Structures are given as structure tokens and as C-alpha cells.
Amino acid sequence: MKKLLGIAVGILGVAGLCAEGVSSDLTLDTGIKFQTDRVFRGRNEFGKALAPQVKVGYQCCEEASIYVGVDTAISIQGGSNIFQHISPYLGALWDVTEVFTLEAGYKHHFYTTMGKQYTTGEPVDIKRCSNEIYAGVTADVLLEPSLYCFYDFDRKEVAIEGRVGYNFDLSQYSISGLGINLGAKLGYDYANKPYGYNIDVSSEGKKNYCYYGVNADLVYELNNNAKAKFGLAYEGNSAKKESWVNNILTRGHKNSLWLNASVDCAF
Image (tube, rainbow, N blue to C red; front, side):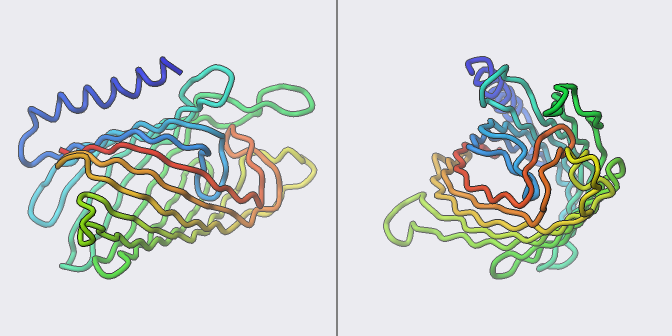
């Protein structure tokens, strides 16, 4: 646990030091989140996790910007504490109009551990890496609706996800710096091997499922650059089987309720 905290603090510390020398055209976003469950597209991948993140953006012109970053998830639930999921990415944003913003990018998913079969104890024969592209549009209107499409070349997976959100500023009630963020999402996933390799090898299982989720976060502005969040999230899926997603045991039709706590910094 101490090693994990050291890694996380180190990432944020180095990012903060680098931020002092960036130009006005560059932005730097860093954060670290604690989750009581790690859920990805309605699939409960593993339990307690730390999720450090770093993202650097560059304003190309008034209407467009590009960015690069890394998302990670570190399992801290028993056993040896190691990186479980690392995802470097790059992308671009374009303000098409005053209302609509288009986004497109590429993400590489890498898992560093392998699941084991119940019967033999042997590692599941999975691909540790996959490559994904994505594109979407966000509207700067009430509830900030967005719609995104993802395609993973290696798993032949297509995912479509819509989101809405709303932010309540509580400063008008004499609670300076405090707010509430609410969000909801609905998604659809189709893949040639939808959950990796099924434990029940006699059946291929369905190739698609829907997922859904809601979240509520209490947000407090620590200063002009940093925010602390604490929230509750709920997510579920319509999958029927218990199976492997990449290397992670995933239980189909499992609803997950978990807590989040994070600190985010922007420069």
C-alpha cells in the first residue's frame, strides 16, 4: 500500500512541478481517485483501486486543441499490489459551433495480470493489449448531453455510450466552493468475444449487452487549481454469463454500487 501511495504522489508531484514551466497554450490535468470497485462499461473488473491520471493539452487555435494522457487503475484488494490497467491515449477537440464540440482519439489498453481458470488454475489465454479509437459529440446546453462511439480493433468490439450531467453550485447558499455533480449514462456493447473467454467453454454466450449507471459527487474547491470530490456511483449490465473480460473475472448481470474519493488539479 505504501508503494502505491508513493507512486501516486510521485505522479502528481512531478506533474505539478512540470506545470510551473508550461506556456499559456498548454494545460495540465492530474488527479488520483480511490474506488471501492473498479467498473468499466458496466463490467465489474476488480475491487478496491487507486486510479492516478495525467493529461496534457495544447490549444492549437481558438476552435481546436489536442491532448495526450495516461489513465491507470491499480488494484489494492489483497495479494500483491501491482498495476492492473494502463491506458495511454491521444486525441483532439474541435468546437464546431458555439454549442457542439467534436472529439476523436486513440487509446491503448494494457493489462498487466492474467486471470486463472477455476478448474485447472492455469492462466486464461487472453490478449493483454488492445487498441481502440473513439469519436463523439458534446452539446453545451442544459444537462450537457454527449454521445460517443468506441471501436476496439483487437477484440472487434463496438461500444456506444450516451451521457448527461448537471452541476449544482451551492455558493449561492453561502457555502463557498461547494457543489454537487450529478450524472447518468446508458451504453450498448457488441464484441466478437464480448466478455473475453467464457468460463463455460461449451457455450459462446451472447455477443452484446446494455449497461447503465448514475453517479453523484460532492465537490469542494480547495483553491483555484485543485478540487476534492467524494461520491457514490451505481452501474449494472444485462449480461447473462460469468466470464473473463480480457484477464478479469466479470460477473454478468451484476449491479455494482461503489464509493469514489478523488483530488484533481488543473494548471
